[in-house]
Amino acid sequence: MEHTDLERQLARQQDQLAQAVIALAQGVELKPILRHVGQLSMELTGARYAMLSYFEDRKQYFIPLGMTDEELAKLEGNEPRGIGLLGLMWNQHEVVRISDISAHSKAAGFPQGHAAMTTFLGAPIMFGDDVQGVIYLTEKVDGRVFTLIDETNVRTLASACAIAISNAVHLEQLKARNAELEQLLAERTGVLRG
Image 1 (spheres, rainbow, N blue to C red):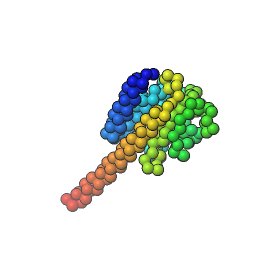
Image 2 (cartoon, rainbow, N blue to C red):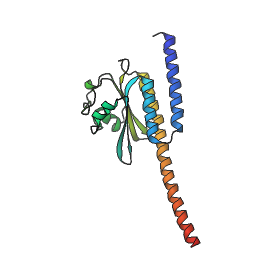
Image 3 (tube, one colour):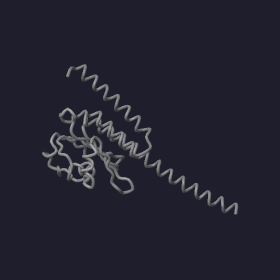
């Protein structure tokens, strides 16, 4: 790749990343925010697949991207368990970028029905010391490995996503508290009128 082509590619990625951060700052609904982050991560890195995992009301959810309906059907009920490489992100808060999943000492294999994959890039979505989720990507479309630039872009998106998730959670809490206060006000107004 020529020097000017590389500069154009980097400038395009920087622009996409800036637009992504701006869009995340404006989002308020959790699932669309996470889906958007996954799609942007795939675009920025050239990944074939992305998965975002997060907790909401103490239940773990997964947002898979890039898989066909048939591939998703095979995974039904066999979602990742958060051990192995995913455990490094969830529990040790590590960013993981490797060229061969099976060669990593912490690799735990794939869930039943999951297509075999080789390359991997994942980052925890952290707000302070709190892991709110993880994002991971596999298999670059062109067959190459994930680069340090890819890792930096995913880390940046994960950080922006953490702020967006925190905002969305606080907004939901604020709405719930407002509803409680409105109910209390209505009850007290009824008592005063009665």
